[in-house]
Length: 239
Ligand SMILES: NC(=O)c1ccc[n+]([C@@H]2O[C@H](COP(=O)([O-])OP(=O)(O)OC[C@H]3O[C@@H](n4cnc5c(N)ncnc54)[C@H](OP(=O)(O)O)[C@@H]3O)[C@@H](O)[C@H]2O)c1
Image (cartoon, rainbow, N blue to C red; front, side):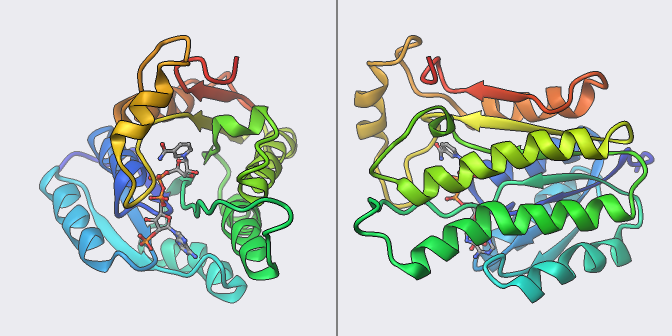
């Protein structure tokens, strides 16, 4: 096993885009602190995949909708990985609701998972880290005012602003950037055909792939002169 570049905490890393990011970071030389909430078995499979790549992986269960649980996460990770240098805030909920339809629980769930948790995870990450990178996974919807996913979109817009403000405060040691995917994967239980039909309206006229999101994350982690940036991986949807 070669020396690791450091360790990366990836939230929501058991499945889908988060799993692709976690695996790519391992291939890129990072040990992985893999956070999950309900996906225990996929998380264990991902941990085996990462260890087969010759990197260490430990699993961290945490409900990011619960503040005390969230506040304990980075200290728990540091006990296993004192060299934590990368934080990827990827975990997400995606529930359709207009302003009229939005109840307090749905409101709080979205703001807690997309904004409060990344806020306090970034704060805790910065406390023990002189050099590192934070990558927040946003959504191309931050560029528009989608009335069908009101709180989802508002909470991702707040995370974009946090990305910029944190980049200003935490430099020069810590860089903070965002990746805003567009049509990559249908929501859990959804079908890819619907996304493909809608993608005909995009400049690039097709849906993207998890590898496209991963490439943007690695670019932002590797480029030492980029901070406060948001890379749109959306086939031009934001235009
Ligand atoms: N899919 C797309 O095409 C697309 C498009 C635009 C933006 N994005 C963004 O890209 C990122 C990844 O997308 P995705 O579709 O792969 O995400 P996802 O499958 O909807 O969610 C990722 C993970 O978030 C975790 N999570 C949800 N609620 C949680 C909670 N209360 N506490 C802790 N973890 C929680 C879940 O972990 P468990 O499974 O362990 O419970 C889930 O596996 C998200 O930030 C999303 O907003 C995705």
